Image (cartoon, rainbow, N blue to C red; front, side, top):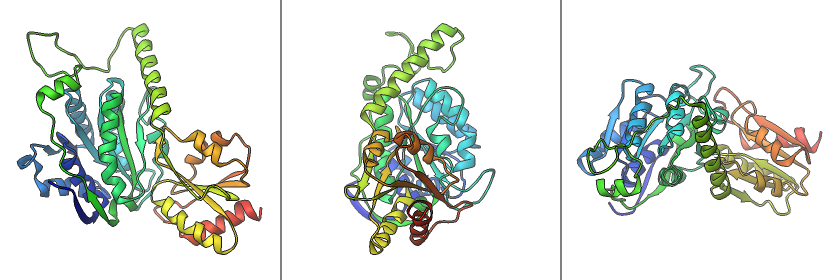
Length: 361
C-alpha cells in the first residue's frame, strides 16, 4: 500500500496504522470509546493481505496475556482498551515490563472512577506514568493531540518498544479517539521474516530445539539478589530513555507572561484560549508534553523562567500538575483547572480560570 490521504476517526486510524506499520498481531476486547479499533481491523481483514493476526479475546486479561506471549516470541504485537479495561490489564503489563519485552498498548481514556461514563477523560495519567501495576517499572507514554499523531505514534511507539525492550503506551483521550480528521497513512512497512526476528530479537522464545540454547522468557525470579539486579537493570534503561526520548511542543513561549501546560486534545482547546487571551492583552505560551513519561521536566523548568505563573489544564482533578510543580520547584505559582465526568472545557473557560487563579488572584 502506498502513502494515502484519508478522512477518518482516531480509532480507525490506529487500526490502519497497525496494518501499515507491519504489526504481527492485535489482541483486544470491545469497550467504548475505543471499540472501532477492533471493528476496523475485523473489517479490513489484514490476515488475508499482510498475515496479521487479529483476535477478539474473551476478556481484557486474556488479551494482555496474548500480547505477553506474542511479545515473548519477538513479534510486533499490540492491544487497545479504555480505562476500566486497562485497569484489568495491569498485572499483565507489569509482567511484560519485568520480562523486558516490546509491546504497544492503546488506552482511549473515558471518565471514571469505576465504570464511570463513556465520555472523554484524562484521569488515567497517574496509572500510565507512575507504573499502574505492581513493582518499580515505567512505560514509554505518548500523548497524541491529533488523529495524525494517533497514526504516527503507532509506528513510533513500537519502534521505541523494540529499541529499549519495554512496553509503550499511547495514552489518548476519548476526543482524539472519536474525532475525524484528515490523515496521511504511511506506506506499507513489510512484516519481518522469521530470520529477521531472530536477528533483531535473539532473546525471543521461539520453541526451537537443537543448535542453540532455548530461550526462556519470564518475569519470575525467586532469588532476591538476582531480582535486585534485574530491577537495577530496568532503572538504568529508564534513565537512558529519559535522556534520549523526552518529547514536547512549545507554542509562543518566548515573550509570554504566563504558561499553560496541557496534553492531548485539551492542548488544542488551550491553543484557542491563547488566541482569545491575546485579544485581552494577555500573553500566554503553551507547553504540550508529548511524552508523559519520560516527562519533559527540564523543558518546562526552562519555559517557566521569567513567567508569572503556570496553569495546568487537564480533564481530571489534577494529576499532571504534580509533575509540573516538581519541575519548577515552587519558583512560580502553579494552578490547576479541569473538568470532570466527561465534560469538556471551552476555551473561554480556560481564559476565565487563568484570570481567576493567577492574574487577578
